[in-house]
Image (cartoon, rainbow, N blue to C red; front, top):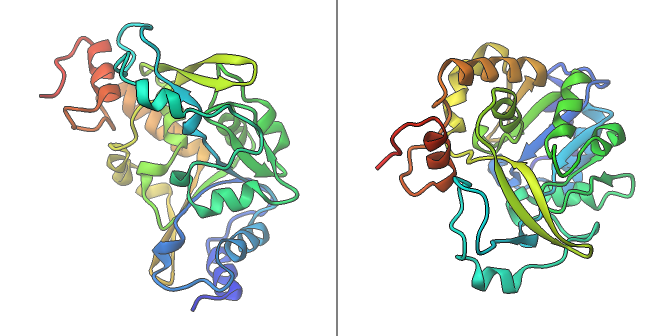
Length: 269
């Protein structure tokens, strides 16, 4: 069984500056053994590693699929009849989608945590109020941009780059085709601009990022730490040099196929 001391010791061995904020993605199962105290213990260890922590607390259950909308939008209009009936109004205390992981929901519920107000792509964090307030419907990834300006780090705990939300900002900075989505809110249906694409191809970033990645094993979990600003620069340049970089190869991926069409390239078949 892994203890609080095991987690703190492993995280501190990365040599991160506690004054630099972290955006964290984590899988508790990746440790390969029970963590005494679960997500609460991991969060406590992280708060001894950094004074400021942020995580995605996205809420996909608010999303609607309309009958029509912008062209090449990576979505099948009119396909959401059943899902639209199940959609829920966004509220600030809505739990994070289970895909975000147990740690993200634990952070959201922390008494000192704040949450941004985006009805689909909210972030929650402690001591990152300025970053959270930067988010708008037009710029959903602005909190990550703020963390980059604060010399923040990405921390991947037992997960790979396919869940590294910050890579979407590199896509945005490189000018990659973005999307529009719609969310149900108490103030009506809100149009959410610059919605990011698919992340299934982000594992391809691993080799490019080796030179800037710090690593440590805790239990069976590989922990990766990357300086956010350097990571964004490397991947922005990669996408600018190769507009197909980091896209997935699934023929049924509507968003990656839409990116290819935006580049006037033949979609994958």
